[in-house]
Length: 493
Ligand SMILES: [Zn+2]
Image (cartoon, rainbow, N blue to C red; front, top):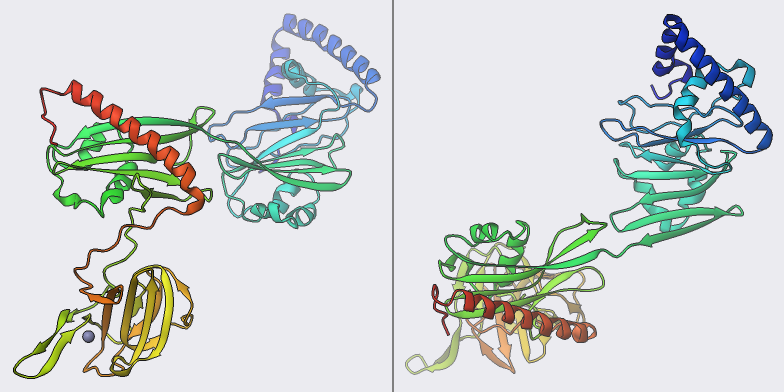
């Protein structure tokens, strides 16, 4: 049940019983009652079109019902308490009672009178979104026309209201006549609030954004056992440890970390009004393994994507992936340099490597680059050639090309460019893959892959300023730590 009549108010009936038992109490209340009626009457006279608005906060265990503001023109404000099972507060517009018929409600008024707020204040209702709720339903619950929803949802910025999340709060401010919506606010997340206001019957939609407070914290540990245990003991938030490990995974075999290796990090903690929001982020970290020091800097671009770079601006993600097919069965034929076989008088060379795989297995670009050739290529059959700076990669014996691949196309590392087959001179389905640097073939399985991509030019200024500062702070902490632990642990290099 959503609605409880104020006449059913338990508080009031309790008081009524008390009247019957104690004549002194009766007299007392009669006097109080008289004063109240007199007061109300006077108040009504002095506030012709005004309303007395009463705000009663009701705390219910599940905190779903937060606030109820109810009013009845000229007289008793009425509180209505939605039962706990009902999720949202319900507006109660009481019929206009005449002063003469005042009954139990007056007693309720006496109890609630302390919180009286000024006249002509619009009425604000706060709703908690229920599952499968929509804006129309919520408007209806507030006593408004559900059709208002359609006109609000027309706005691009208000589309977030199409997918209301259960448990979130939406507040509606009604004009004093309670027939028009003056303002709607919806907390999209901890930082953004959608605000829809009506001015002269025109909707204005905006999103208010608050910047969180960012605190930078420091933690360091020497590994004894696992890096995760060390992190936990050092008080590093548990969600940061996988981030830390993955940031170094291309430099260090994390499984080979051992006692005596150490790490340190700065991480950011975001708060709004003292409340922690979102996940922590690593700002900078260092890992000392086998006497070598590795450092990474976390950088968040304006789109909110955080990536890790070496302090000199190269992504920790390698710019090439080693294998163009991930689920090959075995290496059918390895790379061998071209040399003339003296006895057989033929040239035995294999300029690439053969990955034996099922026909149709996706073949992926091993770097970001430009497709320069798509087509038959002699004994290579269906072939794709890609270029990136001095590097050229070749993919042969394909069964087919990806639909979106054509010469001149720029592709990203990991994009599917074609499928394994046996076109050209091939005994069975496999991918023949070549890796050239300045036109010279190299063993794709052994070639030293180039460093990660340089951070985008537009962010370099900001990145290097940040990187310089963070590295200096890491150094400072390291020095202090070394002085502190000078006798317990000799520093390598
Ligand atoms: Zn081959």
